[in-house]
Amino acid sequence: MSFTAHDAAGIAIMLWSADASCPERLATPFFHAAAAAAMDVPVELYFTAASVQLLVPGVAARLRASARTDKTIADNLQEAVELGARLFACSDALAAQGIALDTLLPGCARGGAVQFMARAIDLRWRTLVF
Image (cartoon, rainbow, N blue to C red; front, side, top):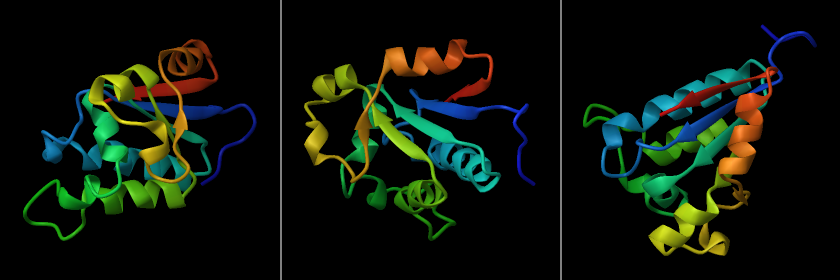
């Protein structure tokens, strides 16, 4: 299934309360991102608050949503990226966590409240917050 010109222009997904302290909450945002990207919908993932830690190489690789799965959160995130999802890290969240932008996963860009709100007020875009 692919979308036509009169459908949603894209989906912006914000990770706010989904962070490394609650790995059981982490697979779902990436499943939704991968599903939308597989449907040829542009996907933007916005990481804010403590979720920016997931963008530090190695952090998501140590996490699993369940002891019953072999897939790591890094695997879930990578699947969404391979399907076309773009990653954005909030500048203020990075500063609060003591993380430099240049230490994040390749392809991650700076993007926070202004960019996410621009998507939220654009009637052609859909938003989800986790």
